Picture 1 (spheres, rainbow, N blue to C red):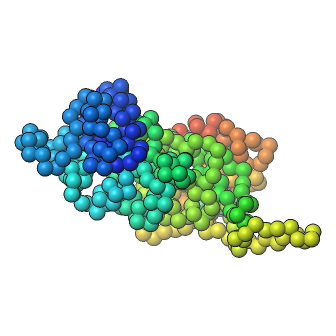
Picture 2 (cartoon, protein in one colour):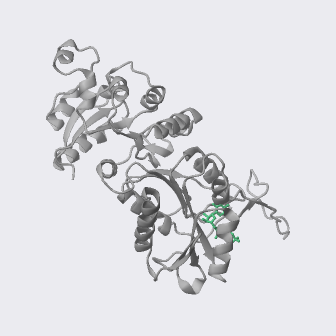
Picture 3 (tube, rainbow, N blue to C red):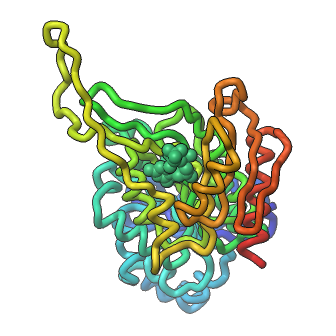
Length: 398
Ligand code: CTP
């Protein structure tokens, strides 16, 4: 799949740079050639010798190397590649890219190219969550940069959270997706998935039975068709799809914030089982038992994310797909829901316990559009995802 592809790999200064050595090996095993660029900070983590030994190529690191400039200038270097991959992409590199700065070889190459760019960010959790980094991320995505990861987990700095660089195989999947000629290539699609957790106090929350299986299958199917997928998921046990940008959230309020920050997109698929209500005043400390007195929880309504996006004047995606989880009068309720929320399509399913759909591996859906409805036979959630993704491709590429 990657044979005869030239990948210009920029290795930034993060502890995850060691994974980039494995990435080089795996890219070459798949037939790609790697043109390595090591930033000054990157060379603190891996040596030019190991990078050049693994890539079988000369390592570029200096903007003002006159000998190399005479052989192959930095402009030509960046344009000789089929794809630029930045792994690890540090907070600093992302900031430089977002601002269009060109003060070293890596940033100059990134500015001098019109070749597609994929970044694999990695940094401390707080740095990743910082509004400045999130702003830079949004700018880069609007500029058409693809993003893989970061993943959640224990970090070298001793903290836990999103910030670990995606694994080499995940980066490879994202690279393959970037080269895929799928019908959704160049389309950016947002998918929400999983349940939300609405906190009661620091140890308790309200949740629902959504496993996130259908949303995950949809994210994967869209990525296979070449889409650049932003996958916003509530807490689940299943692995998010590979080759997509994953953003993990807990509550409906967090999901709304992330969804709004991800816009504009070409299409939005709202498969999450978002809680309709949150506890109005979350207790900052654990609610204690008091002489047999029952606590009373007051609820407040969450913003309907699907309706909010569907009714946007300026940033509405050209296709908005909602889901309807119903237990009675599925088609009547889902048809009314489509109108009320203002989305284009509704994927309606019967989630009564006897159907085994919520938490199960199969789904039985009716797709409701402006012009009528399509009753799909019961099939695996992967097959539903595949069929829906192809329909989305048809609608967007028409
Ligand atoms: N949804 C959303 N934000 C919410 C609630 C729901 O984005 N706060 C989206 C879901 O992702 C789904 C659709 O709205 O795509 C329908 O969700 P569903 O739970 O079936 O509908 P409700 O809005 O809860 O309506 P009802 O309570 O009448 O069933």
